[in-house]
Image (cartoon, rainbow, N blue to C red; front, top):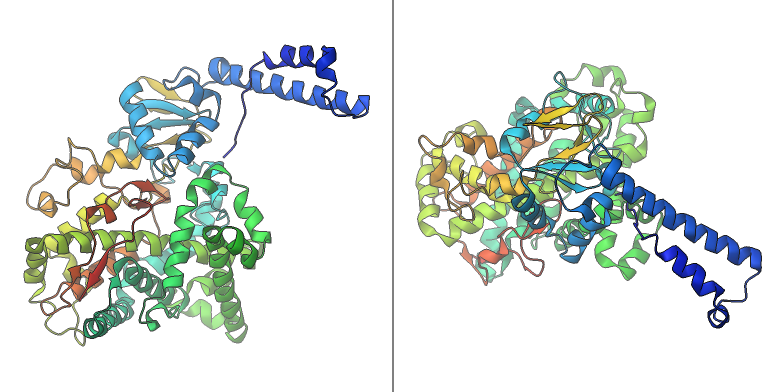
Length: 540
């Protein structure tokens, strides 16, 4: 994020008077006159620049007419302050500002926020309607700018995304179902072992291991092996959690990922354990890329190109695609792999955790899911239903939707930029090139659309319901920037929930866990509970 200081011009005469004062001059370090004069001049110029920048932003900028706090219009430090001072609770502040100033506000010098669910479909459109860039500050924030999802430019994003689309298509995920079922069966097996030992299970950790093993198998041809550990690989979950908790810092000081890239992981881990997560993830995915590059040396390019696109894996697909060599560097391949694992693991784990907690906290809801699954899950684990059959179960589908609503998905307001088009909102015209966002939290928790919005109420999705509910539900975004992995996320969710809540499935009981362990409180890129939460824990 670009950070600008806006000091007052009054500092300049005060500084000059201080220097001219004979007593004060004795306090000045013994520097050569030319050096000291240069320092004073630089400081004065800095103050003048800051003052001019503030004046421009407040009165001369094309965005100066938009409502919002004047301090937010003058400096990005305003937004940084309420994000860092509250540590990941800035989403509540944005909602508060909308309540005060109206549906369209300026939340920093360069970004307009529109709190209107109808406008979300105007903002997120296909490439044929409008070219959509993303805010360069957000592209840089997590150090993932080389991945397709964080690519700033519309055309480059389209080029990078196109070869990957067949890998995440509905057909490709349908073909990958058997491996997903095998990972779900492994979770069931480990839960059964925990029953015999009385071991307390971290649901968050178990689900992160399940999701990323499934994602890794689907995308890279082999699992990470997280489910080989009967304790669900706590270091992996700690890494993902550590990466998430650092997003307030990374979004506000976007140079940090660049620094971390050049600092040994061991040093970062000693100085700031959570900060090492970024480097650890990068290190792991670089290993994946190295292995894939070795495999490609032994493969016949002609044969690989003849393979069905759904049979290829992510790294090989990029390497043998028509992309230019500049898009096939080891760094970019590792970044693409990092985003797939981090985004897939954290978000889907979160949705599964929400659904599982509420189905256990309210036994009647859990029983209704089990009753609905009775006819389909009798052959588990040898004969399993298809994902499409699970989607047809009304109450299970309603539980998935409600978990997606409460979990939100990507909670951070992802600002879009339209380089060639002005955007109209009611009587307002937003200039081209402006960063524009719609906050996700108010949409998913709108009490007018979802009565009792903080409660898990699957029945609201049954029968005929308010069509605005579907309009407001956008966990995977829309338009040309829609989440590429949404089909895989849905399959992971349906298959594991069916496994755990089938008749005869593991009898889970919540252990020292209440609603505060799932209730949305912190924005770490995805919705998260209170910072000190130990997650959802169960005994079998």
